[in-house]
Length: 429
Image 1 (cartoon, rainbow, N blue to C red):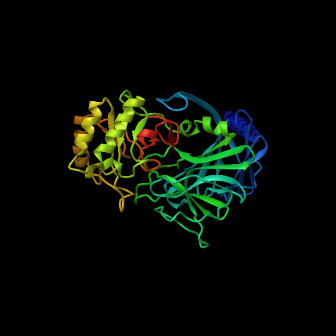
Image 2: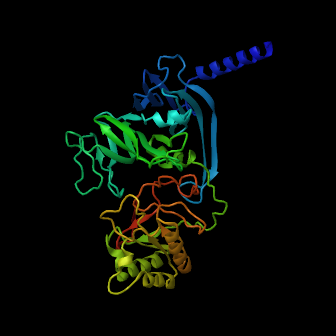
């Protein structure tokens, strides 16, 4: 009995000692503190981020955070801005209301947090309560929501922005301002201090999120899942990369918190730059002559791939996708072809549609592609054919993260090329 009592006292003392420490990143640049139900993140003493209405279980407690451990990430990428990635963080937990716990990591270049459920009932009753406060006057680069995720990130200093009429999925406030935004979002809360908001490690049974705002309060809202599909005991990671612009650009925080690749053989994955018709010719992939120009450009620039985009199933002048694929292969360029996922963006969207939704349809398409050594572009998880998904017009898949290799740590992988005779530069997005 005395041994058990002594062990309990020692454990309690260790916990109190750990939680009494300052809540900081390993390098000391980032710190976290609470004021009531508000979570404040500081960078070198300057406030970088504020989260409102956090629903802490004990906001008045002397020790809100409990230290858990030091996290060390050390892994290699197939491609991207850094091949050997490493980072470290101090990890804490915070009890929330309704049987929920927040797991917070303070990395050297940002924060990551997620909500964890103590049981099935807690998961069913819980609604995301992540609210970023972005004060008026804050410089920000944010994309208005559009289903195709092909908008721009203009510099603004206010939430009072009129919606882009041509965007799909527009949402407006009672005052007529746009109030739905896509990730990522770049903020400059103080001169030279930047914060990039996003999310990471979206697993099976989870969905991607966007931001809805009520004036200065920007709430994370997950997409609706089909009944019974939300089976995870935690949310994806909510992340904020914090520092100067160099810190933001160089950060690998998105992949740092993502699960390692579960594929044993990644040798078939060969990342590379693609010549792409779409940026200059919205409907160019149904014209063989235009496709040939981009194949020829790939040859001149020594690019490994050409992307044959939407509407290749409606080729003009009696030509077909077979002709385009054959020409690319003759020139030594590997063709990639785009499929509409036929899940979200369907009405008014280009084809080909409904070719990958059923197992028997996928088998037929995969077999066809394998015979022609095509690369597929669509957002589905890989299967026995070893197909590498690519996010085409969609920010990320709703459920396949953790199944795929950490093959790139930039927001998107493809290069939108200019017209073939203007190939001096490309726009990365």
